[in-house]
Length: 190
Ligand SMILES: [Mg+2]
Image (cartoon, rainbow, N blue to C red; front, side, top):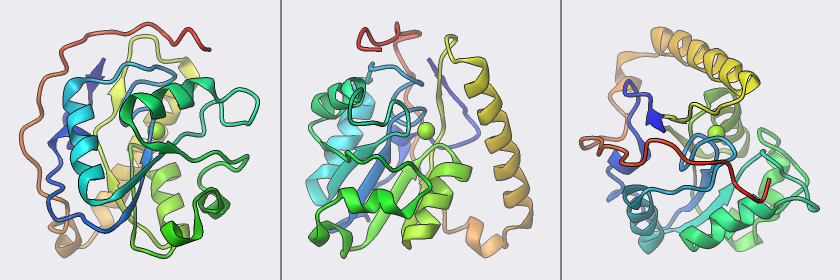
């Protein structure tokens, strides 16, 4: 797996300033590759750091239905965070209904790799959004690759029109740690 270096990766985010927040963390392309279950030690450490001061949920549109959510449950179990189980899909704000009410009323933060999905979802629920460098795999499906291209195009256009002040509000990051595992087989649960 490899990350898009032009965008800060999850493990490089400085999350010290994030606290008392409900964090909704995307799975595919954000903490692991599309449809995969491998989680690097650095990603796990960053999620633990986030969870030490916040409530962290994970969610993915991938295989998001009540009958076949096994892979997402495996990922949630591995990182020790709750999975949002809902028939709704991002960017629908109804995804938020999968959270207990008391976790919906505190500040919300969405972390994901797609501005057209995660970013729009964040906007619809009134959440802050952090776009992170994408976890990619040689086994990414053609359709997935196309959505990545579209998303990067939208993000690039958005960056052109964004005010300089807004650019400076980007979360400061540290250096990206190398992703030690080059590939990961698809989840056997799929
Ligand atoms: Mg994603």
